[in-house]
Image 1 (cartoon, rainbow, N blue to C red):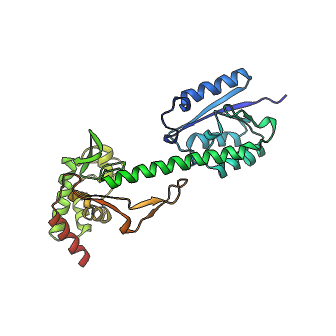
Image 2: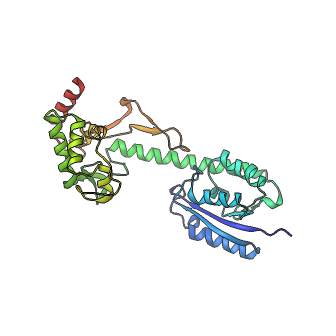
Image 3: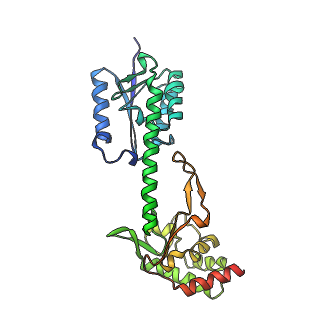
Length: 297
């Protein structure tokens, strides 16, 4: 009799919401109970916590596939088929082609599915429904974010250099004094006629951390491992960003598809701009003067 060695695969993402029945701990209980009651040997638990089902580039999933290729696993156990993924094409390739070709048994406990009993006509439909759920959630999220942008709420993951998120309202920006001083200097240099390349060189000589490093380390000047350098492009982004005169400009790009992380640029007339949303670091006259000089150059 064939010995079945099982991988317990668990996945959870924001798509699933804060539902206890979908939690990793609940998935683990369901899978362990099923494995014990049906005398499966458990090889390992594979957990992708915080990874969307629309992408299959997940660390635990990739490790599980490697272990299947190595012959360590011949059974994959999940709470339901949506844990495998919410892209019906790729999910179908795994459930109907890849796993059967590797002799891997698939068990989706709550769906009552076990590939040992043969192919089920309902599986393709379940995969389609799982993708429809992800598509609907994506649409609702986009709609919610669009409404916030129209209100002038800042929806970025990180505050722009020179600002930080208000602790009382994460969609509102307040000045970060340390980095705001660097922003002021950059604008002063640009106003005096210095080129972005020259400004970047000055900041590098003074060991001023780049915006990315400042966000990571929390201090303005000093030496850090694998130090990044200021570049003219970074300076250009700062002196052309209207956030420093109190405006919030969003909707500059969008995803090609809810299944993809590829972004495309929106036409400028589709950008969403809200003025006087937070305290300005630079006065409008200075900002516009620099913009005019840069356009002429």
